[in-house]
Amino acid sequence: MENTEKNNLFNTLDIGSFFNVLKKRKEIVFLTTLICAVLTLFVSLFLISPKYSSSTNILVNRKNDVQQVNEQAQIQANVQMISTYKDIIKSPTILNTVSKNLENKGYKLNADEIKNDIDISTQPNSQVFTLTVKTKSPTLSADITNTVAEVFKDKVKKIMNVNNVSILSEAEPNTKPVSPKVMLNLLIGIVVGLLLGLIFAFVTDGLDKTVENEEFITDVLNLNDLGIISEIPATKVEELLASSHFKHRRKAKRRV
Image 1 (cartoon, rainbow, N blue to C red):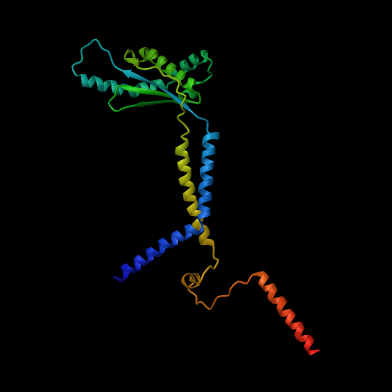
Image 2: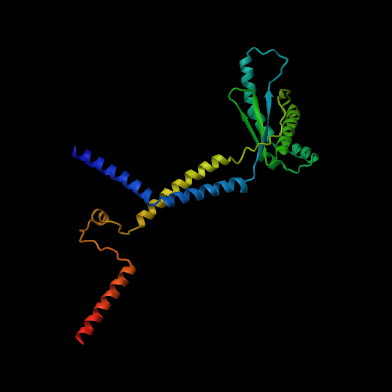
């Protein structure tokens, strides 16, 4: 019972000390949070270039003259083919041709640059995969997406000896940037600034050995309190010294 009461007392003291430090060092926490938020906002708005994405959907549907007995097995085979097609899309065979076609439209991009801008995503058990391109220009993103899809559809017939790729939608320029996400970055900056502010506050408080009250001497240093010396303002000291000097001169004159 006594141990439980002691633990509750210590927990109360810890919580009280925590809030006392926050109250005493609130300026540090506030300034650190504000600085991190402003820096994050500045970087997101002025230093990070916005990027725009365009997408197109491609359907993989094998067409065979032989009647398939197990339709589910055929669909599963098409799904497995998507993994192979994803590798083919990013191969030099496709991207070198894409680079040449884009050069005719006024763009100068090599195969590696195009590959870095491409992202291919699929849904489980779906015969459709999405080709997404992200660049610094909405028009460029759309042109690369459509060019890659067209070149892939044309060349895969010769590479795989199949004719099972269909482009479901044409990519359109999207003028709304997908990155950076300013509000998300700002929120992260505020959280990071708040954590750093708390760390700085407690480190500063831990390094501060200034005696502010009697409890610091008795509770923290475990020393006996012998008394308190009050601080006297400098003006008051000068007044006392002047008064003492004046009285001393008057006594000296009386003795003479």
